[in-house]
Image (cartoon, rainbow over all chains, first blue to last red; front, side, top):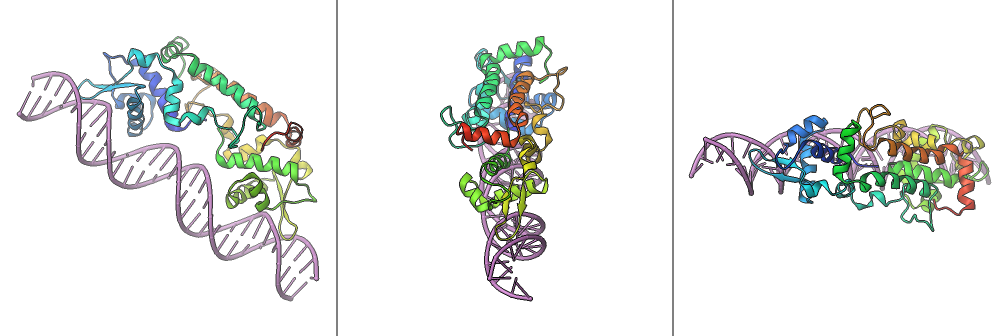
Length: 141
Length: 141
DNA sequence: AGAATAAAAGACCTTTTTATCTTTTAATGC
DNA sequence: GCATTAAAAGATAAAAAGGTCTTTTATTCT
């Protein structure tokens, strides 16, 4: 479903939502260590998210990554689509160039049904809301 | 979700189910052309399926690939797992090393639901049954 | 201003996936 | 037996994904 980069991105964003604020920025090192992902690789991904204004960052001493209030109010879907492209939730699960309601592949309707399930979670909730859920239900990221 | 190889494999198997028989074998060329996939690459995949007894083949004149009655009565899931490995339906959608009922990631339950829906289709039906459905409902492969 | 810090950017490198081409092996029909 | 056909196997190549390292730029603090 998602590329490794995308998985790292989602986890990092949730981690930032839970552990950072404009007053408490986190460096790549800390994030990479906590999530146990390759640090330089994660840096690239965070840069990309930052460039696309999905996360915030400042350079220099006591700089780092964090989520602004605006960042917290966007959806994880944007994060996913920034990293894996907008087609992730749109392309045929069998790779057919055309696969639609009128012209479905054998897995079309089931695939749609459950993609929508995922979208419910990552689009129906803001990052902030998701983070709260992670905290309350002690979910793993 | 599935690798390209796996998508080609699924489509090829369904194509064989619909268009081949022990008396009517198909060459890679025909299959590749019909499905519009790279022929040499498909050949590799078919070899792999054949080695694992999920499809049948014979060499020489009037040889080719086909599905035996036994092949028709297995599930597409086996095809998928032969190509993409048994972990496709088992690994965490966020890539976490442990992600379970007791220790779920934020997408765990929706992801499970998603997978189970797909499994319903590719495991709950034999390849033969799926092929019938493809024919009756004029689905695209 | 200068030192220190941390992200941004760029250049590489490695591995995996996808794809192609050639040679070998097995089966068929003459 | 020989020519032909088609899969099996092997070698290689191209592209994409994943990962590392170095240099540059911006910021802060003294």
